[in-house]
Length: 385
Image (cartoon, rainbow, N blue to C red):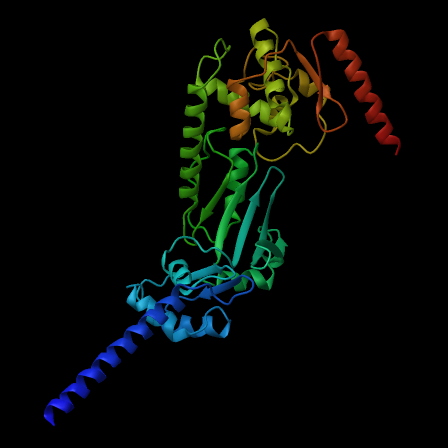
């Protein structure tokens, strides 16, 4: 009898172990299988959220078939305590294991909202954007002048209260150091002051992600370091025979190129004009240097250049000085720096606007005068419209 009972117990244990193993294998298959999401969603994980809370949220949103299996799987994988706060883009068909990886790997939020401060030559603006998971495109929620506190929309203040909002600064190429510092003053998530105006040309105009509480001085430091790296690499790869004695002179030339053209395809041709003039001992005669001599980079001129200003003796007026001015006239971008150290091989020594946003180039003064005449006809026609 006891032998019969023991046999039954053993049989029951074997069946139980077999069933348990089957359940475990089924659960593992469920955890790694393609998920039920038919389109991406943005999952917000506030600070302090637990894996249990996330599992409930995922189940409610239809991202997982079972919140319990998701939670058990994350625990079994040792990721229960690795949950990261933020806003995370969950792609369609994501498995529970894939979602666990997304929510525990850390880094910057991959969806949700962001505030972008665009700091340019003529001013600054702030844009509040939110990612649409279905299209993976940002939709604009608000746009305003950050210097006008009364213009701040309510949605902006709401975003400031969210721990997962991303902040980004976008600086336009050709911006001056004074304009950078002035623009940073309006970015209210930053702290502190900039003690000294950075040297002109020393800041890399680019996009920089920041955190609330970062200092303005730290942004300047990042921009300075980036420009040093860009300039050093470009100077190392410079073309042979340039009439430039140092990387500093290349930076000055790059700043002039930056202010002369916004057309990417023209930069190397514009660079060739100035390099050819330097080689021939011709004055550069470029209007942006005259303007810098008037404003010294503190704002925009906002009007045409007067004849008296073209003749005025300033350190930067290349109509009256020989060679390059003593400093850059703006902070050039990577492409203009690259053009300065590797200009196109041309015989051009003149250029003038052509009415299309670009320029007409010439090798001789006679050809240049014809281009100027055409440009004046275009200007006259526009004035009559």
